[in-house]
Image (cartoon, rainbow, N blue to C red):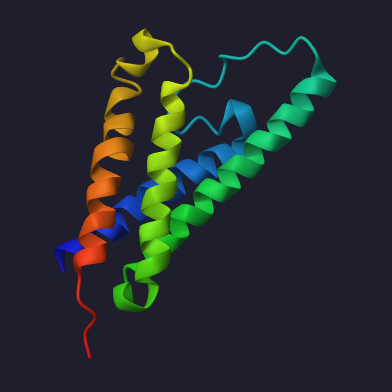
Length: 134
């Protein structure tokens, strides 16, 4: 039951974030704060990058949907749920590629990154250890 609730909560949070980016693009819908952090100097290039960001938001939404709905049939979707945990871990590793230690260790990024690098691998391990019910 605890595993199911954690998966549902994680899925709901990821769905929320995926919708914010997917529907709002690079500027987002503002569900995580101000949207006035971008000054567009090349509208055509921005449109392309914004479109790519919406794609990434859609992928993130998909990860959240698998986590959320997979929580209702853990045994059936265990492999997919573990794969989603690995994808989130890979995303957390990519944060490190920025090399911007101040941002990485800032309170607007650090909690998410710790969840991605610690909690999701633990969740994947927990899923791998669960026994299917007959």
